[in-house]
Image 1 (cartoon, rainbow, N blue to C red):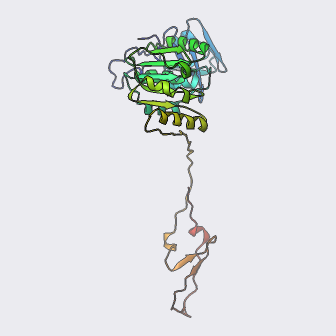
Image 2: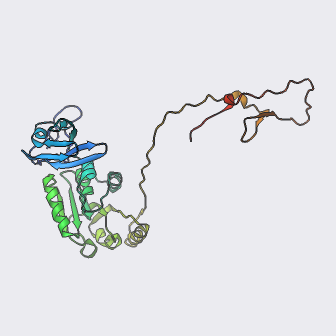
Image 3: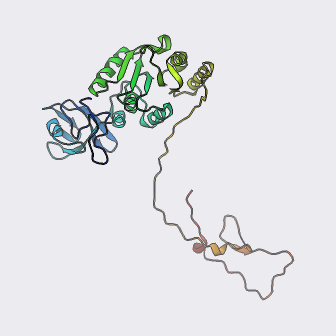
Length: 313
């Protein structure tokens, strides 16, 4: 299907036949992802006889071409190394050359999920930008589906077309067009299952998107400003769209730490005993109608360390 395994997962988990187009090692001209450090990725196209230079040293493309994906590649001075990985849409998003601001994997996964893109679907995207979302869309719809991508910037369209061809994405069509004014130029009789608008003025393209969207199809708009969202929602309702919702995808990182917690003294919490706020001193609660015995022994305060409790919120 292609000379680059961008859209293939490689060997099947059960060790059976490999997926069409998948390979264990790269070939001349293939794209590979190089791990140069923690969260540091570099994309490069392999050419026989060439080398790649970075802060870890000089790395021979010939050695990479002879090694399977996932191999640790040492520099010529044997002082530093990199890891060579098979390209995927996720790794491409994290390493691609930026021509514009891009959509990252957290938002991409949510967009594809909500557009309900599956193999065989027709998807439309505007604008193309750096092609980050396009790669994930192309994998989601598969070779039996198709992705139509539009951008108003002609140079970006030309650069994206070259990349898509290198990556073997024959089922992706990229075109230069201003969809806000002229709409989506796709073949007659073809209707999209899902449309993504990543535009400065997405509300201007809603009516055009409606014309190429199939019945019960889905439309998503990706906007950074709430004013854009408000205008787009108004345009969607005006055009008869239903189930209009707005979401924000946030990522929260949790750090795990090991803490030493004291064992709580549950026997201290007696109904007849009260604890003063901000203090560990315990006092007897007087019961109405009862008199303290003159011979009663004074209540002994428990050690502070025994009554201490710790908690993590």
